[in-house]
Image 1 (cartoon, helix red, strand yellow):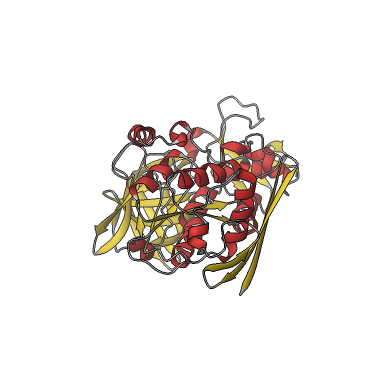
Image 2 (tube, one colour; image 1 turned 120 degrees about the vertical axis):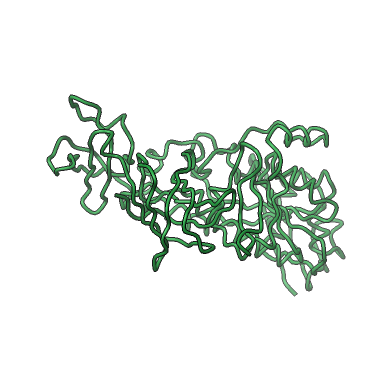
Length: 412
């Protein structure tokens, strides 16, 4: 027997739910109508927002269900993409939403994909379709793994991409663990990506439309892809919104969630200043090491940056590099940004010699020769790339297939 308790507070009101559970069945509850239900059945019971929050908080940590062939766990962000992924997974689907840490001082938390409002929207979508919905409160683990890593990366003088680590590692690890507990044989998400058979292995691949999220998912271990489906990989965003509207889903017009959701709409420099990176006066130097100015912290700069450097010169200067160990920012002319050799820590998913390398989310791919190393790979680019930053992801494609991913450790 397990006793589970959950509560919730909103606008000065409070609600709670107490359950006594034997296996996966509720044998007693202080909420009417729940006694005798399985946890799966209870997760589909609709209710007023505050009471539903309390019940969800009670169920989430202990949720489990017997395995059933064909059942799909659907990652629900509260937006239109995951809602349509849910529609595509009917009739036997379980919605799951990860509640993640948000900066309480951020100005626009409601648009984040992991906000309390997003959780409510996801749950209401599931309940409208008569489906169960489970909330997993992962705020502490997310802060420790993703947010702390983001802050530490900037402190080292890197330009980290937290969305790569979150989407390709943290989220899928938690979601696949949940899918197993929920008795599901697969996990569906609303990402615009596909999977393909390539070189004898199931790999992630670009979406068929202009909206493609394979870069952000590239750290996903190919071993997991046999259990993962991307129902939206063959269509564009307009088709997704139209499908949600035809189904009468309220999220059809919900705006896009923001990147780096934990910033809650704030500028990353202001966030870093509030979360451990105090101003630290240091030197701005040219490529020869001559001091040309001063800065208040390397974390306020990134390779390729031109504006806001604060140095007057005869020709435009760009940030070439940042070094957290010496608290130094290196600047120079645009041509000095050119990089042809990249070393990355990560993995090649299949043996490959030539690839198209993508070094930032919004950059174009560049043909390259790739060589494996003990902890990742090295790239020799066919043409120079400007503004390569340590901490960003190098994602490797062969055709549409993602054949490798690593975090940039050095560039020359």
